[in-house]
Structure formats: C-alpha cells, structure tokens
Length: 239
Image 1 (cartoon, rainbow, N blue to C red):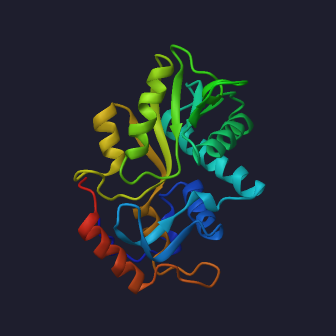
Image 2 (tube, rainbow, N blue to C red; image 1 turned 90 degrees about the horizontal axis):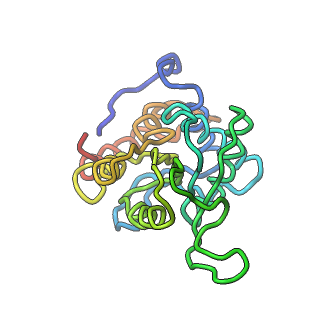
Image 3 (spheres, helix red, strand yellow; image 1 turned 90 degrees about the vertical axis):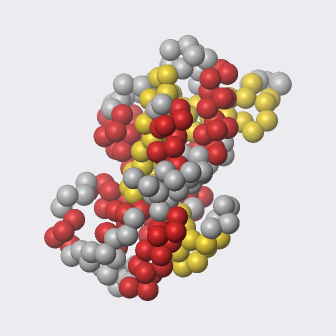
C-alpha cells in the first residue's frame, strides 16, 4: 500500500466525519505517533498506536463513541454482547457499551476475560455478563497486527457457550501482513469466518495527515511519508 497523493482539506468529503475526528483524536491524545518504533514482531515501524494512552474520563467517553459509531456502521445493533479481551479490551468494552446506550438507546452487555480463572466469589474466567447459548457477540480490541490475540480469544468464547460472533472491531487497521501475505484482519475473516473491521485504516490516516498542518504541525511530512511507503513496500498486506 503506497499512497502518493497530497490531499487538501476539500478532498476529505468522502471520509465519514467521525473518522476524520478520530484521526485528530488519536493525534491529540498522543496515542498515534510517528518516528521509529520496534514492534513485538520485531518489525521497525515508522508509526505506532498505543490505546493504553487513553487515560482520562473524557478520552474514554470519546473513544467509546467512535467505536460505537463504527460498530453501528459495520454490524448494526442486532447483537447482545460486546466482548473485550483482557486487558485493554476491558475498558474498551465498557466505554463502548455505555456509548451505544447513549447514542442509539440500545442496551448491550459487556463481557471480558480474566487472564487467570477465579475460583472464589465471582468465579470463572469471565467478567461482566456471562455468555449463554445464542448470544450474538461483537469482539472489540485496540489493534491487531498478527491476529494472535484472536487465537487466544476465540477458544475462550466458544468454551463458554454456543455464541455467534458477529465480527471484530479494532481502532486502527495497520494494513500490513499478518502471519501470511494478507492483513491480520483479512486472515481472521478467512480463518474464523466472521468480519473484522477498523474505525480507520492507516491508509486513511496517511491520506488525511500527509502534508496537512494540524495545530501548526505537519505530522506526516515527505520524509515520514517516504518511511511509511518503504515500510508498506516490505510489509504491506496483499489486498
């Protein structure tokens, strides 16, 4: 994925407003950064997204609203449970469940897993709503690069009840190879049979920020853009 177009403000009309807002929100929250970062995979990336940077009540409220809108656009509201894998998925599922209630008047339950099963008090491996047969579930995560988290999450869900997974929603699609040539989100769809989507793609981020001052700063200048293009030439997913 190589993007070689410089866009002016009027070029962004095609992008949903909440996506533009979310890109600015990631930058303002210092969750999306540009530079040189070593990922868990060992790849040297010119950008990095860390949802752990959302730490205030205002940030979490806004984050939940962006997830709620993206889930509504991609999956509708015909589901019962938001499942957020531990640990970052826990506040994501809570904030988004609250936002869905506020924005759309729909009550959905939240559910998360513990890293270790609890054998006293509120026993079991789950937090929040217990899953039951027939529940329709949307999984919510921050970002996925390799799909490894779903490998851990999918068996947990299926071991609890006969649930229907409607899809996965992450905040940013990095648009790079997962374990094979496809992106992690594409691989998840191929392997597990449910959709996987993101609030925004990295392509949309680059298209929106490249050469465009924001708060007096150009976050993606020519040098950064060249680094991103080189990264995707090596690691970009096959469409």
